[in-house]
Image (tube, rainbow, N blue to C red; front, side, top):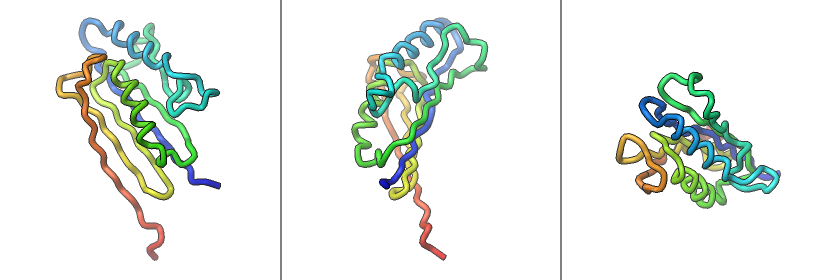
Length: 141
């Protein structure tokens, strides 16, 4: 059996101020452009908690769109996963995004996306990513 990888995280967007319903709808539409799970893509609609534009009152100041999935050794195709995730982010409004990659062989990696402004505007390309890596040595006594 091949190693399992777990990927999970969240995309955060502010819901304060004018245009919040439009921002939620645009983010929802971006997630709904993802393929369905039966097509077996790296990212699919079913792995996301897709926001409901009629439910703004469930969040305080931040709309948290969480996601997660289990893969068979996705770290070997991680560049493709990241490319698809950044393609999704490019279509959305967001303040920050975090992805955790837990692997049996390569440890845990945390990727954080931020933008140079207060929030990312769809199509702006204004984003950068940071990565932190941690690995526990289970062979030590």
